[in-house]
Image (cartoon, rainbow over all chains, first blue to last red; front, side, top):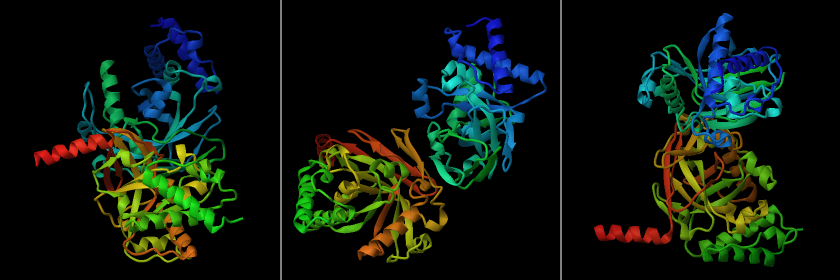
Length: 261
Length: 278
């Protein structure tokens, strides 16, 4: 584990790269001994810093939830990140990209929790019982690392490349749909760029929450009632640029439409 | 320049012999100079006519080359079609004998069962909806009689659109009760996700693919009848299969379909075991 001063310094580097957009070398270049836990310790410091600035936490996100992405990164569990209230944009809005470097968009299912979840082994049933509703979401990712050179430790410290997200379309009770097979089609400027179904996330997106709650439990924490959870991209992440119209359709859940500004 | 009848017959016979002998042949495009798509459909007709002569009967059609990825791979920008026969059908949950196919891969699709004839040209997706009795989840086991799947459009069309076997799920759904464009697919192998997709991956909508087929058959003067089964195209990339695999496809709003794969020896042993227990 890196010492506190080094972790503080990393948090400053990441916070600066996110606030005034610029790229940074991957953090392991300077600290090859950095671990995944160090990455999460940087995330904790980012949260403390942002809360001190008056920003608030609205939920958590899972990343690397598809088999393809896990194999690509050589990991067997998702990565997790934090979602700030002021990064949630309404559907139909223009997403500001003046503070993004190389933004990409992916479609996924968001869960909104009504009850707290805790423990090492929550079941899918318990998760569905604790869910207020699910809704279509798109996430705008932005890796701040130079030339897309990154590793898992650095990405976690960069809060899983989180930038902005949008929730919209039709809210559903989780037991009213088959969460394995919600079809999704994402279009940019009227052209289909990604096709998927919700089962691309670990076979069932609630499995992301299962792993999230177990991970939180390992750190002595719980998933609070009221949290939004982004369960991870079902589609691949597609590059976007200013002027693009992004349109994502979800089976029996409506659609989300935004413009990239 | 179109191939003459002798060459068409020779190519069709080669494919038939490969099919019967469970073997493969070199790509046709390298050996039949000037072969075009029209020639390829004539070869397919001859290949299939030899199969009908052994008792196989047409039960429907398959549509292939419907995804952008596959179209780019083989260099064409429209689908193709082949004939489905009763010989190709495997019951839901059944096991395919790997000794009786050559180089199989699985595709999960939406099957249409027609209640009215569809006679093109001029057929629209709206006509397809009207003429469809129900849709089901299905697997198509594609198989190529061309060595190493080294195919371009002429090779696969001549080879009956690389059709091997098909399996229809039991759940039947009225097409007015499901969004076919956004129907999502999950294929599992032993409970693990192996492929996902969505209806829109097939020509923007599986309805578009079926309308294309009706219009293409209409132009060629081929019948497309009530009661036929149409495999409308793969929702996901091809899935490799091996001995012991069991695949289940779930399509949102439609239902499930299951198929297994086993080497012939293992299958025969299991069957004689069943017989002994009976």
